[in-house]
Length: 506
Image (cartoon, rainbow, N blue to C red; front, side, top):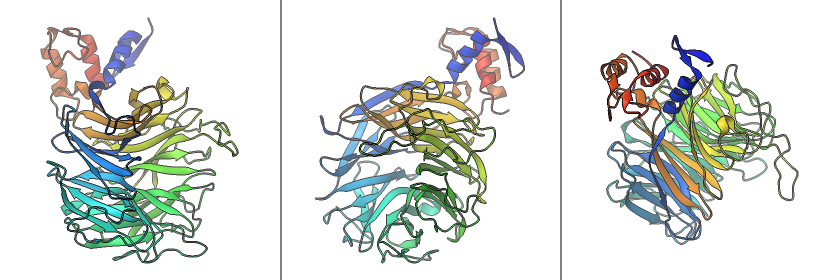
């Protein structure tokens, strides 16, 4: 039988297969929520609070409203709210604070959107951004406000910062959006009322604007994601088609080409730009996810059609695999298919790692989150028959890259008849939660998986000597023992190898 080495031990290929199986997450529960039976609906974003509750938001296109729902740690529905006015209302992002209260950002076209204790009680333009705080116990409104100028705003994402400050980011084409301590105090107006990105920071009670700025160039610029770190630095990411988008200390100072480039920008706690950079190749890039690592590095996930998208040596997939002109466009020219990309940007604006992930057809991420070990958990969907690791065509896929971006360590796959799209991924201790839109018509799907770190037997976040001692002290027949990682009723060599394979520290 073929043999290999694992942490210095000679092991058989069969044993390695057993260890690999142990590294994959196991399903704890899953639930499908049909808010309005027989109508299209689906999840857009999700967070998990400190008690393990999953909070999900999504859109109801028939009603043109959005919903927020809360599940207990076992997946049972606790409450659900439908929110909106007479026009179209859409939630862009969701966040939760240490007390379990919920924050939602989005946009409203309704003159009667429900406001309470509002910073701006009246809609100023055809559409305004919205910001809400909901009580985590029952979903009741604590405060709710419009935010916008005389034209249109959309808040795509939201994040909570030190002291409970609230940051939203999105797009605006209003010349009179409120600015406070801005790095750019006006909309870039040259040839059109094109959108600029905006980022705005509110006080914890939503009753004051602490920082608000435009960021953009001649054409359309959209911030689709925002995060704020423990030091108060704000990072935004999105897409731009402005060749004159402001580049500062940029790893890529010039527009790459195509319909859009991605961009990433970081503001320090005093609201000065630390860096602002293009990220893209000759075709199109779209950003769908952003998170900040423990060291302040930005992790960006998106989709690209560019064979020359910048990648770094030693990563999982350095080359573009998406089919060249292989994806059909109705009534238009065929285009390159999308690959996922995951790129890290250090706090000084230099590139960390950058990799493609994908097959020959369309593969797109929708969100990502970074764990304490610097590993990116990415969720999205694939329409490639040759997606890495044999993930089925047409599936929701959540994957975890190692800290160097050099390997996919684990995958979660959900495949149902009809379209599937993963929307959000969240972490809760050793568990991974995913939210998705599945089936036709779409329903909201949420699932909790036990992470592949089953070998962390003492629950300290590290697979190390204590876990090894637990295995050795339980050696032999031991039904229902935590150290029986392969579930065969006995603690033995395969369980020992699982600890060694997952070894992360002392």
